Image (cartoon, rainbow, N blue to C red; front, top):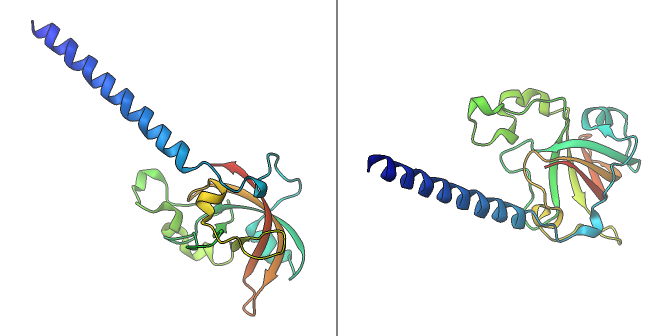
Length: 172
């Protein structure tokens, strides 16, 4: 009898776990389904440059193809716009074993972020920023590895922004 009860308990546990994973997976999939497919490219642009290299080599108005990981702060996405910050992949985000609730803020390597970060603004065909959350528009999330293609912009402090018209998602 104990074996039967144990067996039924395990079967129930497996069924519940299986359902939980399926629902979780479906929720994640639908949450990341992009609405702005016209801004996504299915093939990785050639000759992309890591963010840190681009910051050193790019002038205002240059065409750029930047490789970076979404992050750099606890809130790397700009509300109401398809805009976010990316960090050079050479900068390490907080590893899982540290159990950091926001590894994309790079709290473990914050000093390295300053020279290895760029702001990305997805723009439409007229050059205006797209007024939709980038997570919804592109189907990305914190720590997604992306290649953005567009035009470099520099502010008075030398910070780098990219007015992007194409995004390749290398890793979700």
